[in-house]
Amino acid sequence: MKKSKEGYLYAKDIDYKFPFDENPLNEYPRPQLRRDSYLSLNGLWDFMLTKEDEKPFSYEDRILVPYAVESHLSGVEKLVKADDIMFYHKKVILPDEFLNGILLINFDGIDQICEIYIDDVLVTYSLNPYKRIVVKLEEYKKEFDITVKVKDFTDKSYYQRGKQSTKTNGYFYTSSSGIYKSVWIEKVPKAYIESVAINPSYDNKTVSFFIKSNNYGDAIVKIDEKDYKIKVNEECKIKFENIHPYSDSDPFLYDVKINYLDDEVYSYFGIRKVDIRSDDDRFKHIYINDKKTFLSGVLYQGYYYLGNLTPLKNDDMYQDLKRIKDLGFNAVRVHIKIESDLFYYYADRLGLYVIQDFPSGGDSYSFLPTVLPRLFPILSNDKVCLFFKKGLGRKDKRGEIEFEKEMFEYVNSLYNHPSILIYTIFNEGWGEFDPKRLYYKLKETYPDILFDTASGWYDSDSDFYSVHTYTIPSKKRKDKKNRCFIISEMGGIGYKDDLHSLFPGYFAHKKCKSVTALENKIKKLYQKELYPLKKIGLAIIIYTQFNDVESEYNGLYTFDREVLKVSDKLLIDLNKLMIEDN
Image (cartoon, rainbow, N blue to C red; front, side, top):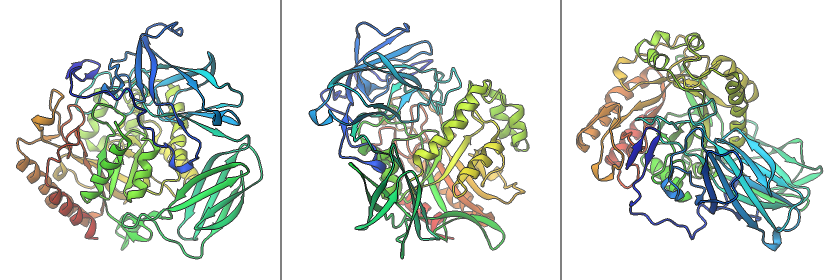
């Protein structure tokens, strides 16, 4: 393992064969709006990493899409600097069945800002590395060129970046620059379904559909072998006599088929309700389908061995979520990253509840405003946050405007997933600004969604009193508003398995020299420190973390997922203790 100031690179002689002759991650990538028309463009693309702004005449390299430039799986494995420019090129030859109608080219994730050209003509650009980009071609040829120009400033600008950093340390990681999610094509008819928003109501036994189209007329929605006629571009409600609720113990999903003129798509939904209520007028708790529910979850960073932000196989995501569920956890906090659509589909299928973070951004963070709230909890409020706004990375108004726009894009893109219960707006002050205003703006638009406004440090108006603590006995509840009390990060107990530790250094909030010591600390944490807090209303806990990431060795699993460091029975029993005793 090689490390520079900008990040980590795997040793070139690592024992892994590149799948250059394959079409990686080629499963249909959008289960919420699935068509039979599908052509994956993942695979080898021409590539150039350069300082020059103009498109190159020739390409020196090849890259395996959709793996980031820095990743081992990309075949390039170079650290990208803020003044670098990445050029991708691919010649597309369409099958005959794609030669009529409208062509939609989907780029599921490009980090950070990009321009997309078709036959050297600029067709679109994006500033959001976590949003799907769709290029619509109404006139096209059987053969055409795609060129993608990308710049990644990482933490040298205000764009959203999550945990990526040019100064890697224990809990900030190597960048994942360029195309890091699938690229794919679908053919649609002239009049087609652009999106489907599904809003079930558990109390009213209804499901609202908003089918957005580029045309007008009626669509036929089939649910449970029954057809419903629905006008496109209007919200329409379907009434059910009986409903089959969605829950972690019974993750029932309704299959949906929608026919609109010559377009046919498939989707699904789950009917569930989540809200916060007082428990005997004392403490507030999460209720799911009118049942008081304790959430015991694990922090999930979404970093993968050899692939950085991208797994080798889509099944790797499924296996991670299944492991989490099998260990007795009923929730996962997706930490400062938007995963691929398949990830949330797997969570939906498994019945694993999701707390979804908005990716953080802003310019570089100063030391003082990130340490003061930990040393002096009395300073953990939104007024102090406003005072330290520049130190928290908000030096450019354009960054605030981008974040505010993108937070709605995140919720809208994930709205249909029944597994997602809560969204985190800001984490530990990183890029935080106007938390109170943004919370109420989101609640006005999405009154039935729960928001953790400021997870960890600078408290503000929120659905939760959200605490990060890795020294729990010293942390007492001091919430005068009597909100739902959650510990959204805790644990961080490290053990470095030398046989599965490629990365130098060793970061953890607490370190253990043996598996026995690790198990004892985790057991004490849950039994002696967390469980008693349920008496004062503790409603959610999130353990840091599911797997090691680079030099952060506080995962339950090693980075390669080959070793579970502790007994599975221990974790199952501890989760049962927290979840079942309500």
